Length: 118
Image (cartoon, rainbow, N blue to C red; front, side, top):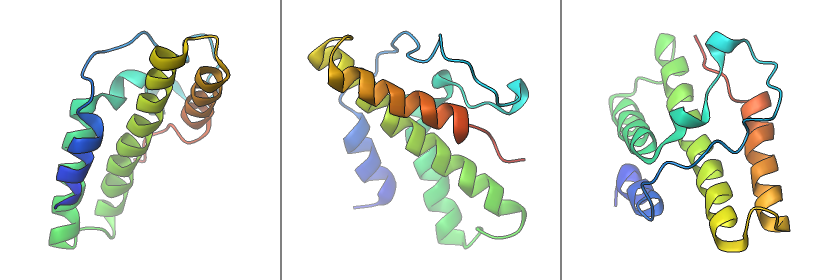
């Protein structure tokens, strides 16, 4: 099983777009460098996994290609955090400990690691 196929299995549970979980959280990353929740969709994660798999197969992971590979990895990582947060909200309710904690993890990641490499 390829990496992109494994990721597709993980993310196929839902394709609906949910309201932003981090909309009320201050983000200090420069606006033009920010990864947004809308960048972390299921289709974006699948595409990122396919592109990353292709880069790995070609050996394009150094020099200028390194930033591209890191950006694809960020989409996948962010999508996993977003999926967990939305799943916890749907399963346990928005006021639950599970939902608040997974949303906090997503928002912290977006505000610290959620930036694009140039």
